[in-house]
Each structure stands twice: as C-alpha cells, then as structure tokens.
Length: 278
Image (cartoon, rainbow, N blue to C red; front, side, top):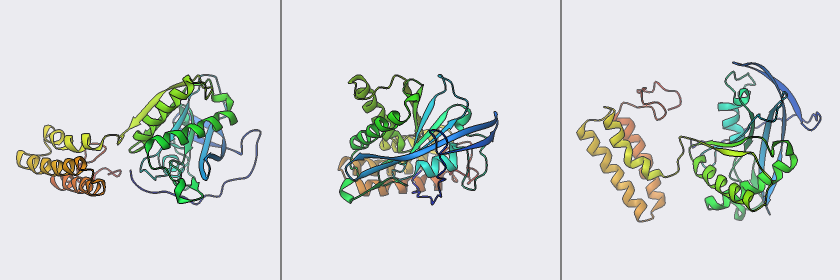
C-alpha cells in the first residue's frame, strides 16, 4: 500500500493514571476497555517520531505487545493501520469488532520520520537508507520502553505490511543486536510478522508471470508478454536506473491487471475488481 496518510485528529488531553485517555470497543471476543497513550520521541537532532499506544485495561504478564509498521514508505501507521485495519476504532469512531486488541496491546509508529505526524525540522534530517530507519526505530524503542517498562519482559512482536517489510526486518536485526550489546533492556522480543512484505521487488516481479500461469490466469502467449515486461524491469534494476525501474514495476502491475481481468493482488480467487482491497 503506497498511500500517504496524515489524518487531522483532535487528541484528548485527559490524563488518567499513566495514560491520557480511556475507551472501550465491542469486539468478536466481547467488550474490551482500554487505555491510550501517545507522544513524540526525538530519535535524532531534528527528527521526531510520533507513536500511539492502546493497552487493554485487563493486563497480565503474558499479554503481548504488537508494534505496527505501515508500508509506503510514507504511509501513516497511526492513520492507516490504526483506523483502517487493526485498531479499535475506524475513521468515523465506530467500533472495529476484529481489532487486534482481542489478542494483545497495540502501538503504532509513524515511520520513517516525515510520515503522518512524525516530522523533521529540516529536509536534511530525512532518512535515506533502511539502516538509518532501523536506528531511528531503535531510538524510539529505547524511549518507549523507558516510558512503559511494563512491556520490557512481555512478549513483543513487530508486524507490518508492504514496504514495512524492509523496515521491520532491519529494525528486528538492529533491536536484536542492541539487546545483545546491552543498549536496551528488553527480554520479551519474540519475533516479527511480515504481511505482503515488499522486501525484494524483483523476486516478486519475476515470479508474477509463472505464478499466475500455474494458476491458469495466463495462457502461454500472455505469459510471454508478462515475462518480457519483467525482463525489462530487471534490466533497469541491473543498471541502477531506480526511477525508471519503479515506473516499469507500475507498468507491470497495470499489465497484469489487463491480462488477468483484474486479478486481486491480495486474494487470487477474486478478479474483475471483486476485492475492495485491490
């Protein structure tokens, strides 16, 4: 998902205990009451990350914490993942019966800096490599777990979608190394969950044709057409023509849609725009 989100929200200023607000949501598992906290972490000079935490009122030592990282890069986890996907409320304030709060607490970070409510003081503070993004997330984690030490020993998972896969894999490595080095006291880090992760684009582009052919969405002539476009994209990547390669990938998606009657990118059992997500 490559949408950019910067929702305009009026955040309540009420402080209840260590949290800033409380609420409830009706879910498939029944009614859940929860508390909220949010804030900024200055991850570097001139770079500030915004985060938002949802914590169920009924806590125990085994209740996990899920960190959600959005894709894009440039899509807001606080805006998109929270209100459109797994948070307790939608954009209209309605309950989400399927919220992940049924299984664990949730924290969203607008990442990388410049996304959503996260901001930089000057354009020179933007990240330009995934390694820099990983280091920024590490600084966020050091600050967050100091503010909420109750999560240091609880099961902690990093989950994501799309381009968030690159950032999650990098952050997981960085966090693991920092834990081993004693830079952060965190004993509960258990693993990551990668949803439609956009980690190695050409591995996707080069296999779309054979995969769809194997599932009878393409005939041999159409497979040749799709593979020809994939070869073009591979050549652009090999010559480090990144902007042109990105355009080629976009053209590849349009071509796949044309040749398959709009097969769903999220569920190939659907086509012809039957899947709202596609």
